[in-house]
Length: 266
Image 1 (cartoon, rainbow, N blue to C red):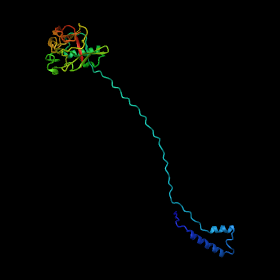
Image 2 (spheres, rainbow, N blue to C red; image 1 turned 30 degrees about the horizontal axis):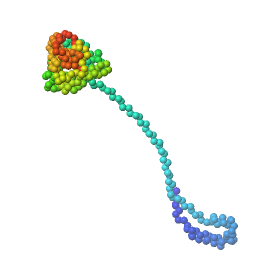
Image 3 (cartoon, one colour; image 1 turned 90 degrees about the vertical axis):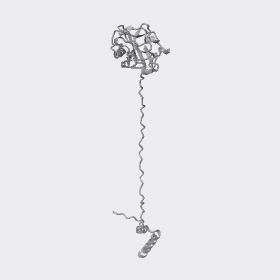
Image 4 (cartoon, rainbow, N blue to C red; image 1 turned 180 degrees about the vertical axis):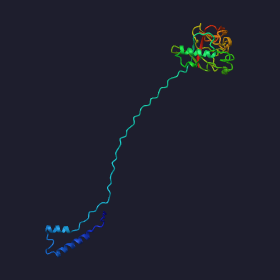
């Protein structure tokens, strides 16, 4: 169905003119005067009048959309806990083993003896057992110095167990006691007046195999000079000393005797 929009409405003058003509026609054509002022005549007159069309608005209705507000949820932040990194004790420790004759089965055997002693008797010391080696020399297999007090510097070290410019400790109960500090050649230069800070062992009757002379050069290490026999002679250090007698007493001992080993953490 098609609707036609009425756009032309009769003007007020045209409407009045038509109304006048209608009243005049009725007046002339009726047998009675019209209108006579009766209500009935007025009703008839209103019925005869053309109806004025009501203008319809073409303006579309505007619908305002309803906005729904979504509540904002603030995320809960869980505090981050940074794990504590355990402190690693990197101190270099020394300890003396139980006594043993001069036959260790070579340098490697002496190191193994230190490691077994660490596990059995010094478990509280920092470091794995495999980090410990024996403080002994044997010809050029393990060497501290080839000249007195390493005149040629650290280049003279061969598989040496002391590191240059390093502090060494013994564990007294729960206390770390600093025993000595090495120089740039990895030794304590007794020839220049240096000494240990404290004795390696407080007892003057305690001895340990070394194979060293008192200037850190090689002296003697039993038959074959390799710590593989319980025969021959070898040098040793002594307790209750902070001088060069801590590495060489000045006299050799038969390798059938039982002395200790000094073990050092690498």
